[in-house]
Image 1: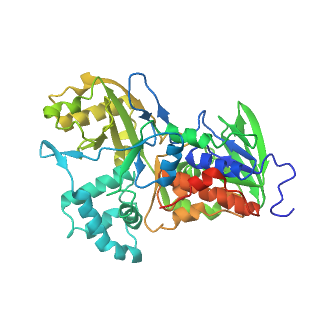
Image 2: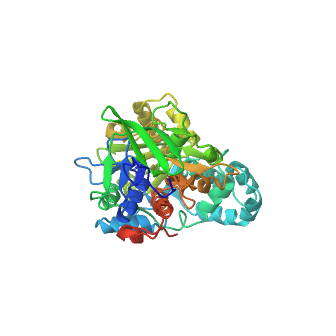
Image 3: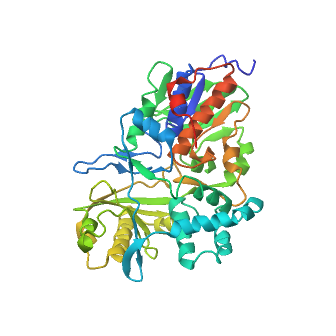
Amino acid sequence: MRHNDPPQNADCDVIVIGAGAAGLIAAGELVEAGQRVMLLEARDRIGGRIWTRRETGLAVPIELGAEFIHGHAPITEGLLTATGATVIEAADSHFARENGQLRPRGGLFPHIRAAMRKKSDALARHDMSFDAFLEQLAHLLTPEQRDYARMMAEGFDAADTARASARALVEEWTSDVIGSSPQARPREGYESLLAALMARLSGERLRLLLQAPVQSLRWSRGSVEVAGEFCGAPFSFHAPRVLITLPLGVLQHSEGAAGAVRFSPALTAKRAALEGLASGPIIKLMLRFASPFWETLHEGRYRDAGFFHVPEAPFATFWTPAPARAPLLVAWAGGPRAVRLAAGASPAQLVRQALASLETLFGEELDVTAELRGYYHHDWQQDPFARGAYSYVTVGASAARAGLAQPLEDTLFFAGEATDAAEGTVTGALQSGVRAAREVLAAAGGAHYPGRGAERARPTR
């Protein structure tokens, strides 16, 4: 059998595992190029770590997972625009509790970026942990600025700063992903992006199965057998190639655990890449109140606030839906802080911690518990099909993302935010899906028609 010839019992040309952002856009690229695609999703919904809910009486979407569009993201914005969705810039005003007072906080990050740039040459020669790097910046940054940088690495990157690669974080923070670049949201919610991706998947060349977790994958060059369960019955599908978009935490999880996939032969070529990346933990609670009380405090001083910070509290960061108006605050913790908070805690206990943090933030004279009307939460760490929020690079593993993305034997192809060298966000997931789909098509041989979506979704930085 020649490599480009499909197995005689092939059910399709390509099996795509996972219907998150990477899997959906990859499937769209492949279908538009004329490939027959089997798209398998373990959950009862598409979207992966994108999960939008709508609640009666609430003017903004509830984003249990991804919420922001970070920096310049033409691929994400292009897909949203195609559906008529609106991208709105998030409010970027910050307030922090310092010395018993809630004051505007600004100007710290530009100093941190400037200091990072001055020391970036040293990192090019020798990587180190982010904690160690901050110590080397002691003569350039104040203790307050270093604490803010550490809090940001934990919150924004969900990273353990004792393990996280300073080289990778500096590259990210001095790029256009954060800093002076805009941070935005899809006004109608990230479900608009999913609608745009699904619009490309109509037709007889795609078969989508939900609630079809893959349990095993047997492969040899030019031949793949994927097995699992659908509606309580076993399935087995064959194809010459498979595109894998499993989250990093799932790929790292041991065989036999819920959600894990058994590879035969094992992915030994990916061991170094998998060991060089970490799946960052987060806790995201959306607290719904009787009214947006913060907008009227202190004669409306915080009416247009975007973010509140209270470093000493269990939840160090909160944000509002501004410029949209809604009685909703997001309580956020990432990295080791999230691990400590979640240890043995129920969602109700986490909410009590968040309310206590708000009392620290605004003062005990405000009874936030009496204002609370409900909360929304999903535990991405315990979710067997996620096993974490998103990835970060550990010390000395600068090549890990590229290593994870590298195809195996022109048969196994990999996509997902952890495989994108530029950024581990929704945009990174989309870019990786386009890249992996084109690798599949190249392996299939011959010229191919890239399709409308491929041109619109061309990954650029």
